[in-house]
Image 1 (cartoon, rainbow over the protein chains, first blue to last red):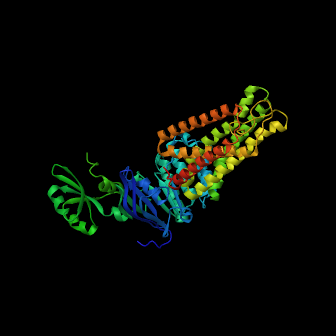
Image 2: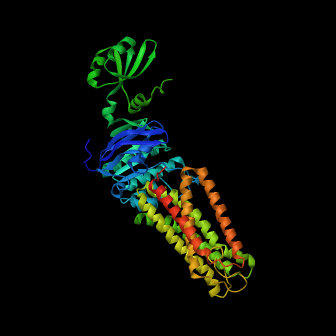
Image 3: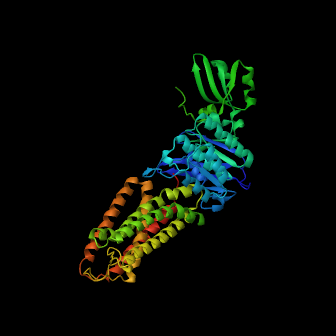
Length: 299
Length: 226
């Protein structure tokens, strides 16, 4: 992947440890302009650390992060194009987070050059957020709304959201995806969204990045990834026969009936289609579980 | 750096201005009651109150008032420079307030106020004659205000990574600072000449401030957002 294209955020050989714990391991990643990326990974996979490193909010031990070929670290030109809206915390350091919503809005207006105050005001009304309220007085969902508001109104060319849907009810989650898509259609800016609510967001993500144990397991178009994964089920012997040559990710057996989660191009599945087995597609969540379950998904 | 300065102007200096108004009002009330010894003591303690406030406020500046701008794309070196400028400006304003607080009652004939703990170290003993405050001793209050802020900011940074250690260091700092103030108060009540001590105090305060500023620089330039 070339890094000379405008608006490409690239990480090369990024390593990050906290003491003896290696969180990011020699990680390479390219975030291309004008796409909505989904970042998924299990708890502790290193998602927030990666997002922090990409936006120079976190240090790295080795490697580099560049935007348009220029280092992001301490580079105001690059930092002005990035917005990483983090999950807000009800407590900070020694006590509660007594900063008010308006403190965040005012800070955002001071620091993000593209800040859209009119849009922020509109979202504030829509989300029914009281700017005079302290962060510690907000519910988890309201904190997520502030995060979303900051990210969308920042108008930053590369906007990153960490768990924006956490705590939101289903109506608000739907509204969030709608706002995201509206904004994307209007501005064409790049979004990188980390989430655990995978299936709900799958249709929104143009590309998906799967992070597992500090490494990028997959980074490709969502549809392309999903198309590679299938469940093959049927009689044990028949399933075993058609699975030869395919990458079997997991198996589940009940008596002589066997189900395998497999990875393989459609061309490799043609034999299976002709055999006496059932072939079912996987959704993104199932793909994720198959890739990152590490056996934990087994009862 | 402009953005960072603008941010600190309202996020840090704004609340400070509010407290300053409160102190101003308190000073105005106490200054009218200087004849009463109880209020005289309170009035004399105002610089210490300012110092405590600066210390506490500066911990917020190096914690969430540092991480929030950082999470919104501020550069660390700009933040550090803005922090220093803010500390300096605050110390100068507080010094001006201290000087005015001491001089205004005298000018208006309400009485004589001394702040021996900061400014009267080489002044004449308190024997009823008007206090002599050499101009050279005034900036010491400013320097002490600067040190309070730098120390507060440093300990704030320590608390972000080692909460217990930060609390222990803060308590130690306050024990030492209180001890120092107590010693100065006791010594200033004696018939001693403190002229030679002033440069030493200047040197110690300046060195401590410099150490804190360097430590803060190191921590701010490697600060991360949680």
